[in-house]
Image 1 (cartoon, rainbow, N blue to C red):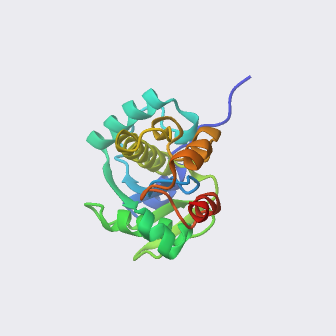
Image 2 (cartoon, rainbow, N blue to C red; image 1 turned 60 degrees about the vertical axis):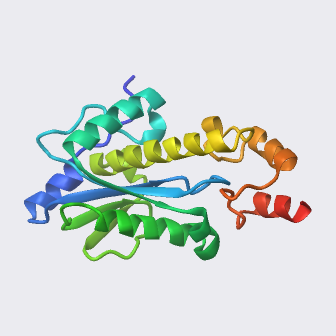
Length: 207
Protein backbone atom coordinates (compact mmCIF):
# COMPACT_ATOMS: atom_id res chain seq x y z
CA UNK A 1 0.00 0.00 0.00
CA UNK A 2 1.19 3.50 -0.77
CA UNK A 3 1.27 6.11 1.97
CA UNK A 4 -0.63 9.40 2.06
CA UNK A 5 0.12 11.75 -0.84
CA UNK A 6 3.00 14.16 -0.39
CA UNK A 7 2.60 17.90 -0.87
CA UNK A 8 3.25 19.14 -4.38
CA UNK A 9 3.82 22.35 -6.32
CA UNK A 10 0.50 22.45 -8.17
CA UNK A 11 -0.99 25.46 -6.32
CA UNK A 12 2.19 27.41 -6.94
CA UNK A 13 2.38 26.40 -10.60
CA UNK A 14 -1.26 27.39 -11.13
CA UNK A 15 -0.57 30.82 -9.67
CA UNK A 16 2.57 31.17 -11.77
CA UNK A 17 0.63 30.25 -14.93
CA UNK A 18 -1.87 32.99 -14.06
CA UNK A 19 0.85 35.60 -13.63
CA UNK A 20 1.00 35.66 -9.84
CA UNK A 21 4.62 35.11 -8.96
CA UNK A 22 6.46 34.65 -6.70
CA UNK A 23 4.35 32.59 -4.31
CA UNK A 24 5.18 32.31 -0.61
CA UNK A 25 4.07 29.60 1.77
CA UNK A 26 3.43 30.54 5.40
CA UNK A 27 3.07 28.34 8.48
CA UNK A 28 3.59 28.53 12.23
CA UNK A 29 4.95 26.40 15.04
CA UNK A 30 4.05 26.56 18.70
CA UNK A 31 0.47 27.72 19.10
CA UNK A 32 -0.33 25.09 21.72
CA UNK A 33 2.61 25.04 24.17
CA UNK A 34 2.52 26.55 27.64
CA UNK A 35 5.92 28.20 27.27
CA UNK A 36 8.01 29.94 24.65
CA UNK A 37 7.18 32.02 21.58
CA UNK A 38 5.01 31.17 18.63
CA UNK A 39 7.09 31.20 15.46
CA UNK A 40 5.97 31.86 11.89
CA UNK A 41 7.93 31.40 8.68
CA UNK A 42 7.45 32.49 5.09
CA UNK A 43 9.22 30.68 2.26
CA UNK A 44 9.47 31.27 -1.49
CA UNK A 45 10.80 28.17 -3.23
CA UNK A 46 12.93 28.24 -6.35
CA UNK A 47 11.10 25.91 -8.78
CA UNK A 48 14.47 24.77 -10.12
CA UNK A 49 15.91 23.90 -6.69
CA UNK A 50 13.28 22.32 -4.46
CA UNK A 51 14.78 19.93 -1.89
CA UNK A 52 13.55 16.35 -2.04
CA UNK A 53 11.37 15.12 0.80
CA UNK A 54 9.60 18.31 1.86
CA UNK A 55 6.54 17.48 3.96
CA UNK A 56 4.52 18.62 6.94
CA UNK A 57 7.16 19.09 9.64
CA UNK A 58 5.17 16.96 12.09
CA UNK A 59 5.63 13.95 9.81
CA UNK A 60 9.42 14.27 9.70
CA UNK A 61 12.05 13.18 12.19
CA UNK A 62 14.11 15.86 13.92
CA UNK A 63 17.30 14.96 11.97
CA UNK A 64 15.37 15.09 8.69
CA UNK A 65 13.90 18.48 9.59
CA UNK A 66 17.38 19.80 10.40
CA UNK A 67 18.74 18.56 7.07
CA UNK A 68 15.89 20.12 5.10
CA UNK A 69 16.20 23.34 7.10
CA UNK A 70 19.82 23.68 6.02
CA UNK A 71 18.94 22.99 2.39
CA UNK A 72 16.07 25.48 2.40
CA UNK A 73 18.18 28.22 3.93
CA UNK A 74 20.66 27.81 1.07
CA UNK A 75 18.28 27.51 -1.88
CA UNK A 76 15.02 29.30 -0.95
CA UNK A 77 13.99 32.79 0.13
CA UNK A 78 13.07 32.49 3.83
CA UNK A 79 12.01 34.74 6.67
CA UNK A 80 11.09 33.75 10.21
CA UNK A 81 9.61 35.77 13.10
CA UNK A 82 8.94 34.82 16.71
CA UNK A 83 6.08 36.40 18.66
CA UNK A 84 7.21 36.56 22.29
CA UNK A 85 5.27 35.41 25.32
CA UNK A 86 4.49 39.03 26.20
CA UNK A 87 2.64 39.52 22.92
CA UNK A 88 0.82 36.19 23.30
CA UNK A 89 -0.40 37.16 26.78
CA UNK A 90 -1.32 40.68 25.74
CA UNK A 91 -3.08 39.98 22.45
CA UNK A 92 -4.02 36.23 22.60
CA UNK A 93 -2.35 33.37 20.77
CA UNK A 94 -4.21 33.77 17.46
CA UNK A 95 -3.44 37.49 17.19
CA UNK A 96 0.20 36.85 18.09
CA UNK A 97 0.40 34.11 15.46
CA UNK A 98 -1.08 36.38 12.79
CA UNK A 99 1.35 39.15 13.75
CA UNK A 100 4.29 36.78 13.33
CA UNK A 101 2.93 35.59 9.98
CA UNK A 102 2.51 39.15 8.72
CA UNK A 103 5.98 40.13 9.85
CA UNK A 104 7.54 37.04 8.28
CA UNK A 105 6.02 37.92 4.90
CA UNK A 106 7.25 41.51 5.28
CA UNK A 107 10.69 40.10 6.02
CA UNK A 108 11.05 38.29 2.70
CA UNK A 109 13.76 39.72 0.46
CA UNK A 110 11.34 39.48 -2.48
CA UNK A 111 7.70 40.58 -2.03
CA UNK A 112 5.32 37.77 -2.99
CA UNK A 113 2.40 38.20 -5.37
CA UNK A 114 0.45 35.46 -3.59
CA UNK A 115 0.73 33.97 -0.11
CA UNK A 116 -0.54 30.49 0.75
CA UNK A 117 -1.28 30.26 4.48
CA UNK A 118 -1.78 27.03 6.40
CA UNK A 119 -5.15 27.04 8.15
CA UNK A 120 -8.65 28.40 7.64
CA UNK A 121 -8.03 32.07 8.51
CA UNK A 122 -5.76 34.74 7.11
CA UNK A 123 -3.56 37.37 8.74
CA UNK A 124 -3.56 40.90 7.36
CA UNK A 125 -1.26 40.99 4.37
CA UNK A 126 -0.43 43.56 1.71
CA UNK A 127 -0.92 41.08 -1.13
CA UNK A 128 -3.33 38.41 -2.28
CA UNK A 129 -3.54 35.42 0.05
CA UNK A 130 -5.31 32.08 0.31
CA UNK A 131 -5.99 30.03 3.43
CA UNK A 132 -5.30 26.34 2.80
CA UNK A 133 -6.65 23.87 5.38
CA UNK A 134 -3.95 21.27 6.13
CA UNK A 135 -1.82 23.17 3.67
CA UNK A 136 1.44 21.80 5.04
CA UNK A 137 0.42 18.45 3.59
CA UNK A 138 -0.68 19.90 0.25
CA UNK A 139 1.67 22.71 -0.75
CA UNK A 140 5.45 22.35 -0.92
CA UNK A 141 5.87 26.04 -0.06
CA UNK A 142 3.77 25.71 3.10
CA UNK A 143 5.56 22.46 4.00
CA UNK A 144 8.86 24.30 3.66
CA UNK A 145 7.57 27.07 5.93
CA UNK A 146 6.44 24.51 8.49
CA UNK A 147 9.98 23.08 8.61
CA UNK A 148 11.65 26.50 8.99
CA UNK A 149 9.23 27.50 11.75
CA UNK A 150 9.47 24.19 13.61
CA UNK A 151 13.25 23.91 13.57
CA UNK A 152 13.64 27.57 14.57
CA UNK A 153 11.27 27.20 17.50
CA UNK A 154 12.77 23.90 18.64
CA UNK A 155 16.19 25.54 18.74
CA UNK A 156 14.79 28.44 20.78
CA UNK A 157 13.23 26.07 23.31
CA UNK A 158 16.40 24.00 23.60
CA UNK A 159 18.30 27.19 24.34
CA UNK A 160 15.76 28.30 26.95
CA UNK A 161 15.99 24.87 28.59
CA UNK A 162 19.65 25.50 29.36
CA UNK A 163 18.76 28.54 31.46
CA UNK A 164 15.64 26.99 32.97
CA UNK A 165 16.44 23.33 33.68
CA UNK A 166 13.87 20.96 35.08
CA UNK A 167 10.92 21.68 32.79
CA UNK A 168 12.11 19.36 30.03
CA UNK A 169 11.82 21.98 27.31
CA UNK A 170 14.64 20.33 25.39
CA UNK A 171 12.27 17.36 25.03
CA UNK A 172 8.69 18.70 25.26
CA UNK A 173 9.43 22.09 23.63
CA UNK A 174 7.10 23.78 26.11
CA UNK A 175 4.05 21.61 25.46
CA UNK A 176 1.88 20.52 28.38
CA UNK A 177 3.36 17.12 29.08
CA UNK A 178 3.19 15.45 32.49
CA UNK A 179 6.87 16.29 32.99
CA UNK A 180 6.15 19.96 32.31
CA UNK A 181 3.07 19.99 34.53
CA UNK A 182 4.92 18.44 37.46
CA UNK A 183 7.82 20.88 37.01
CA UNK A 184 5.42 23.83 37.02
CA UNK A 185 4.00 22.67 40.35
CA UNK A 186 7.47 22.07 41.78
CA UNK A 187 9.50 24.95 40.31
CA UNK A 188 6.88 27.57 39.55
CA UNK A 189 6.27 29.86 36.60
CA UNK A 190 9.15 31.34 34.58
CA UNK A 191 9.16 34.55 32.50
CA UNK A 192 8.88 32.32 29.43
CA UNK A 193 5.54 30.77 30.46
CA UNK A 194 2.30 31.93 28.86
CA UNK A 195 0.33 33.25 31.82
CA UNK A 196 -2.78 33.61 29.65
CA UNK A 197 -2.90 29.82 29.30
CA UNK A 198 -5.09 28.25 31.99
CA UNK A 199 -2.65 25.67 33.47
CA UNK A 200 0.05 28.34 33.83
CA UNK A 201 -2.38 30.93 35.21
CA UNK A 202 -3.68 28.48 37.79
CA UNK A 203 -0.15 27.58 38.84
CA UNK A 204 0.77 31.25 39.17
CA UNK A 205 -2.27 31.91 41.38
CA UNK A 206 -1.22 29.12 43.75
CA UNK A 207 2.27 30.56 44.17
